[in-house]
Length: 477
Image (tube, rainbow, N blue to C red):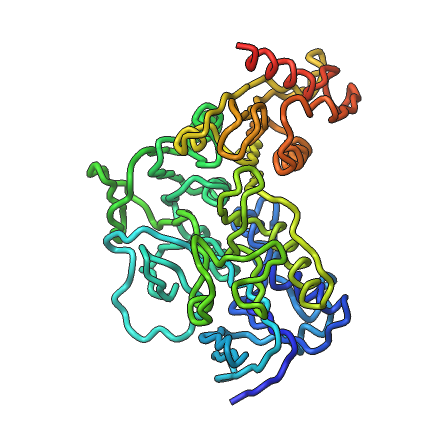
């Protein structure tokens, strides 16, 4: 059995784990090991590798070659272990697991835990195979409330979380004519477009009343319209209840013929190791602003880390790769004895479907209403150019505003943002509103946000002033 002694052990090779490794190396740490259970990749790019329109070389183009990466220190080739940690003995500072070379045991001083999240699938008939003897795949999914080896999925049932998932779906797309995608978050919609680009007829099934839970119905409706324009069949407010060899069955009895099914039904934080280490777990693994868990020598970053929402103070799981990297920097600094705190954060997302671009930050109006938070919303048209310009595009943007001083919020505080723009990226608006919302700014604070005008790039109307005026009028009534 391989036995190692390291000052810092990183468990997880996703964005948080890899960035933490890079940061610790830059800070001078030399006694490191990182355990990763699958090929490192840029997860968010994988659907585009399957689609092969933006990434013609396919999913393999997004797999990180550790030996030749220009983003990672060369020492990672020696420090990386391809395997899985199965036990984290926090009291004795020992991690035990199995690699492709056999069992291992690592004695550590500090652990940086970056286990990520696993795909979650509803427990439906026909989902799992009854074959025996699954030992090859080190990755897992969650079916209902149970962790299951991903190898147990029945034939032509897919998820999209890692390089092997993208490879499998890429091969499926090469030989298939039709597919069903379940779930309409960013990954689900990107997979819809990817399979459409490969020539498949695609059907989208969503259990909620409208697509994209991160947006309200009025904004998400624009996305539904675009999908329909491109020939995607949509079933909303309905559940998939059974998978058969050549079709799926919905909760109302509808049968849809298909060659395969992609489940993009969300993820759940991987807390198995945290349980073995007896860490505090709620929605995810509880951490403080230093990314430190309930055990002083164990830090947690990424999708499994539960943090406090900057808007409401409620516990959240942002599930954002770039935020995991920031968390990795914070955790690494504290491991090295340099006190650092995570800046206030919330949830956000940005994507596109058939050249309709959408983004969201913070809370939707629907979710706020569900939780009893009094809000009002403002929706305004958005023009990317002067109306006389032939290359101008149109869209909508929406803000959700607290209507009273309650539940830790200020009257007039902007708690949510949504945008849909045809043909152009709303990246700059989304980033601006991440700052506005996490800093708990009110509508009156919009006056301090300057606006740069260039006829080639935007209209002369200052969007922040237009929003300020509309909000003031709404609050007056």
